[in-house]
Length: 534
Image 1: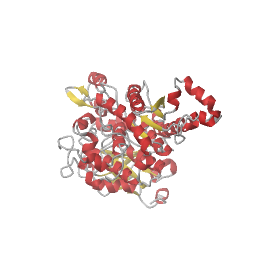
Image 2: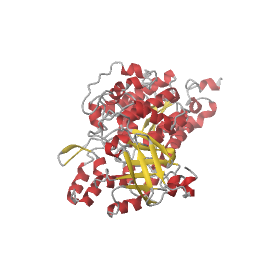
Image 3: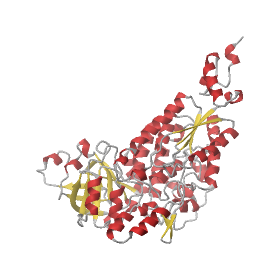
Image 4: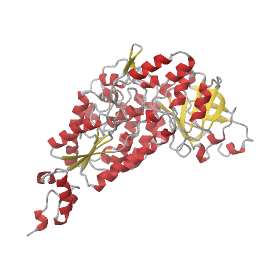
């Protein structure tokens, strides 16, 4: 008897055949039978459905339900779905304390965990269901690293709250309430009521923070289906996208389309263009470069600044503008954004639909409104993120220029130096920051933090107290996507690596010039420790 032929369960072109085919795989087949598979299932491709469900995180509470729709689509298309979960940390819950040391590091752990499950079990394809900030880039990194057919189904935005008669209220504004309470413009009771009404549903926080920036990026990069970047978490549209994604991943498997065929340099540049047009989080700089690294694509800060000058900020979205993400969905979503900036995109890039960007945009109609502007009449003439260089940041720094008042495009002030976020917060709350101050927070970088904490509690206090035209903030840490105001982050080299920011002293003059893209420390030449960099 030809034993190998007897146990040839499926075509050996499938990775999962390693588990199912051959006389010697009796133990593996038995384990699969134990999960409820039958012999017909053994003949089909195995598709990993990897989510990041968490009862602790609003952006992830609904992901198990979405996974069920994904699995329906996979089954309909002839695959066998198998579900598992990875971790999810809520950046919002981590703000303002040592817990913020963990989210950025979790991104790489998530990528590793997806790799381990998929490689160990030899899945043929995968559908990934992330919800918020670091989970999305972590899963995109895993997709690029593994390079098997993959689709992202992001959890997407919650609906905005209704606070004080404002039906467009987002948590980015709520973060400023502590500063407003301290300044006497909001009462304690008003703050308590706002907390209960600001986040009315599951999903990522309703503004364009890092979570929704990354959700939209999955669509711009062609790794998610059209509409996936903005459809409300609680909508039936989100469920239809999930089910369709299950069907489409089977088509990708049949056609041999894998993430590295999608995530080319041209696609990465499209991602930068999308970030600039929407006014996305500065965290996208970190994440896009990490994804590009996994895909084997060259990308640097120069690409971001060049595209920032070419692609205007066209989306009037909070925290840099007026509207929540669901308003952009009603105005056409990411397809409409991409249609507006089409001349700045590489439209030959392929997507998970099997079509090119050009083909997807062919029938997209745009009706400009107060949410989505045009290239000719944008929200602001340059992209959302600017890259600064100078003797204080020899390797660069980033700022979300879409969220800054024009009066602060140039600012010169005297440094007030802190070695941690907590020290700076205490000084602001204690009314000890004078007008004309550049708050410098050092030792918050990747090594110094450790983990490159977000300084949202500090920026929220500045904005809540109405200090956004009186002072600026410079740090080797990073910022939440909810941040707006004159805040320069990612200063590199960081203080813990001996960068010049480590040697800034109280009273030093710092000059921020966004138009000319410079960040300078003006000190005498006898400051030898500093001047070894200058």
